[in-house]
Image (cartoon, rainbow, N blue to C red):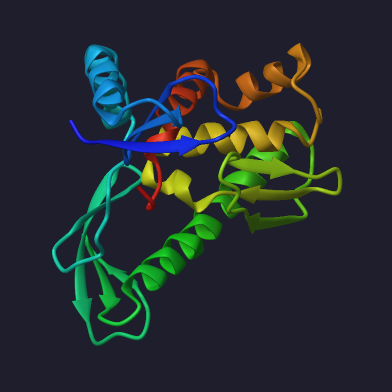
Amino acid sequence: MVVTIRRSQKRRTIALRVTRDGVTLHAPYGIAEEELLRWARSKQDWIEKTRRHFAARTPPSYTFTDGERLPYLDETLTLRLTSRRDAQRVGPVLEAPCEGTKDAVRAWYERETIAFFTPLAHEMAARLGVTVRAIKLTHAKTRWGSCTASGVLRFNPRILLGTSRLAVYLCAHEVAHLRELNHSPRFWRHVAALMPSYVGAREQLKGEGWRLTFDA
């Protein structure tokens, strides 16, 4: 177990900090390093438990190399590097340029986000008797979508790394906000009208949404 020791004149107590990057022991001056490491070893069970937690919460890591498998709704696409200038899907293959591959792939997911949500949102809005003014993107790290009072809906392209069930729930959620800009019982009734089985999808997105990212 490798422990990085950081000392501070202002600190009066010893504290451990465990992150995905390692273990750091914060301590005041005046305590021998051997004593600090002995104290850290006495906390090894807690340290290992915390590190396992981080390991379990680590999202997939994508390298954007030839042959890599990328999730897309209910499918898995194979990335192929070609002489193309941008990324395009050809059957089960996502062809992308050798230079700037990551940016090209992300741009493709952004285009697909608009293409997926535009007809679905308009169809759902018609069922609720409301109007969608525009479909746009959001790259917020902690939000999957948003809705404005003027009828602009925004969706995070990361949702396409999940299943179509999650994407449909997200759409129903944001379209329902065109009727209720809140999370009142009436709002959830609108969501249920658009997607009767929304509860399971909502809980799945809450519990597993952290995995849907290109950035580990």
